[in-house]
Length: 146
Image 1 (cartoon, one colour):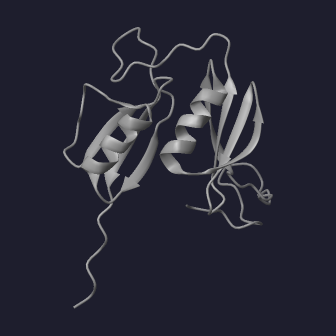
Image 2: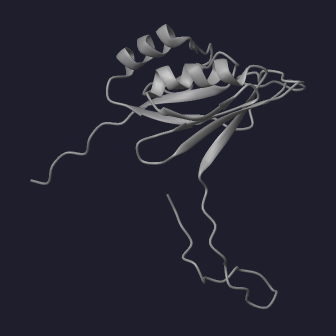
């Protein structure tokens, strides 16, 4: 995560302005059923529930990262990969795994499906129950120094 220290200045032609504290605390995914989508990610990631309302649910990782789900009455799932005129994804999640095949099987058992288009061998593009793409990628530990 890249952070900008408090007090750093914004790059612009304007006079310098001190940067106030700003911290990204989570990502929000839209859905026509936020509790169901949150339940999927709870099973997939094992994160704890924060707030849980019919139109807003939050999950938190042990490290404090957040993932929230909000109700969108006019939800249309994105198309991956999008063609001209298709609803395109706005964001996707990257999830590190140590065993790609096992992670794909687990994700499918929790309700995900494998996307038809797979651009890389060491990554699997998956679709959550609401249609949001997410990537499982092989995060191999770096070798120890010799």
